[in-house]
Image (tube, rainbow, N blue to C red; front, side, top):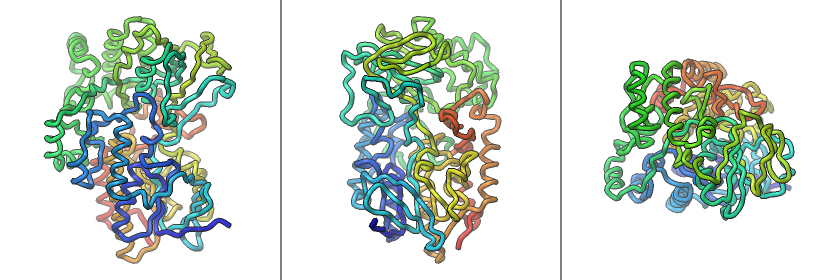
Length: 540
């Protein structure tokens, strides 16, 4: 018989959101347990160990702000921290606050079911025990379920197969091997230059070229770190009030500028744009304010981008293959890179532009496309994630009256503030769909969500409430607002097939998932709802 352990709160996931949620709830003297499928903390940074894996947010800003002592003690080594350093940081946090003692590792959640009679959540796992709790808090991350496309013959390949989202912890040595890699999104863009340095030959299969900007990564000096630490209070305040939770303190995000763009590209001449490309390269487009809201302005920026790409990549047929066409800059999550386009100037790298003929099947020795057969020893999937909803839907969540979350979200994810779903009382989602989440510095959004949930549970304890549930009207109104804010931006352009819309997953409903209004405005709205007696939430 399966034993059932009872808790006040169960947190699913021991990444940065789950660890901070545990730390906060402890101060309420609640009995809390974290369930984590991995062997240790770190979340996405535990699994994503592919070559070149690196954060795309300045490391001094991609860190917790809740402990000033932690901020002062920890020394980041680079502008953009690499995966091993971020994972070490996660481990340091777990050690410093003794978090592992309340985390159950190597345990996979199979179902999450609300019991109407006991008004509690029952979690079944692949282990010998189940869990029951008043509150269930999903800290499962937005990019945590790897997406492997269904390609004919995939099981026939005789060589080694890897996915960037679940990389072997011991690493992979590509020396002397021929490698094929599918995908040129963020993980592909980061891993391709590193794999190319090791492999005998690398063949890159690209469905859609990406807009990627140079990271300008470099070591951090002691003087810079000390300066940032001395100004952390102001840095954090600016982050929380900003659009995306990043201010580029001291060096600028992407290395281009620390100032907000103010110029209109529509006011420039062709000669002026050519001069900017000549002097600033890819960074030239970051100075314009109108490319995110005006398609004409955006296309001018795309022309500047393609012009610079043509200068970097020597073979013009390859350069043409790498040039994004027919979709705007900014409709997908920005990608940063280190020597990505320069890698295609190497003799041991071949680009297969699938726009000229797609993949027909995977064979025992490679990939057959409409353009011909390509053979290699190793196959790498750099095909991203089932973003934002994949982890939640995989856990077979059932709310009141047995309704399944998969049915509730049959037409796309719906939530109030990305924090709660109508029909699922006492179930919280950290950085869920409908919040800034993936459009922001996740650390800033995580802390804001965790603090909000902590304050909410504190309020419930103080007022002897047992249940909280988002109302159907509040949820519907919020979804309307999320779509209204996104309307007219590059995110909703019909030609853009981004994972923000779920377009990378066959059969997934197309709905814009994150909140475009920015972390500062979102925080204001959340605070206003609390001040108005948690408007849109029902208590019992």
